[in-house]
Image 1 (cartoon, rainbow, N blue to C red):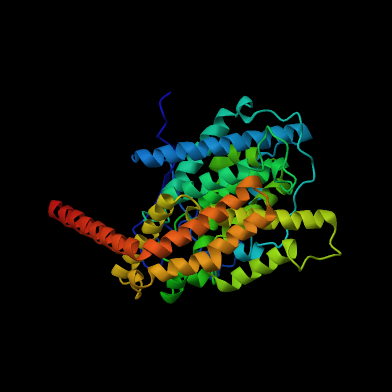
Image 2: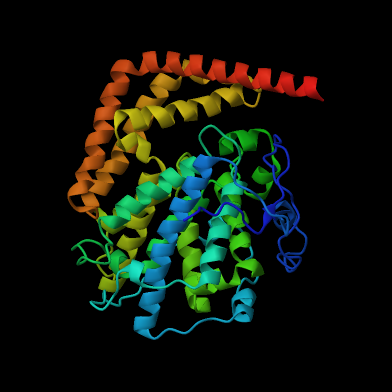
Length: 447
């Protein structure tokens, strides 16, 4: 069957700028922020403009990644639909769905919850294989077009690009498969994840959108530049922007059938949004204040600070919330807990992104001078502790210890070979920069 590469909608994207405002600021809907009083928050939020101009995905790799992501989301959406049918749920009309987009005041970070609510319904033995459940043709088309639209939102960064988002989605899919297979019994410590297809769908959805429109520099750089995003979002600027623009896209009327298939009731839409917010915000791992809050939440769920008066259902919801966020964080940096060559591939790309920021003057710190020690510190302060928490929860069964083992191996390998790798990264980045300069020079000659 011929792969479909033509889609229905075009996203207007402008040139990169140092304030991180790389996309058009026109609204998807004129009424998106009508109740916001025209304050900085509503003015600064960025959205992508949909028009009827078709776009073609010319990049073969991007096309393959789109098809893979669509396939995974389609399978999970079939499970959502089947679960709803088994429980006797109703479909939500387009008008009801559109009205529930209503106006969220404050920022996404303000909506993060310590404990999310999860259904208590047990996994049904009547649940079908997802491949056996038909998906409405309109829903399938809109889902496909939505993923293409999200892919177009990603900037041409070395690391924070659509391929990275797809790698995170693949890693998340693997983590979910260890606890949420529709054809197997739930594990003892799955905390209800296996019987909650909407949460599983949200996990992959969050992975795909979590770095959309990433400016290619960390939040600290955006703050130092006093960028528009940093003025709108005091913390987690890149993460909040990614969520906002993708949520606005999801709520556009042109994706009504897809949205209604995901969320048949406003309560589902609200829960879906809440899970997405918690997961996307969890990927801001560099903010020390937020990291401290997450550590406290982990301790309250699994450590010595558990609330003895908390009900069993509340304990389960707390653990499920923390586990899903931990899964998202693990998937986001999964390259550090995979084979050495995978780690080096993505580490070199992250270095190239930082090196480009330094070369362009957006950063005054040469990453080559600190990258070796930075990676060791990152393993010690974040990667290995995260792997230990994953191992402690035992959510991933026998695979829980696998991530810790790979993290420790990569840390040791980097300690031995890191200086050599940094030298190679610098050489590769300089070659790439020269290639871009030559291409720009050639383009000027043709004008």
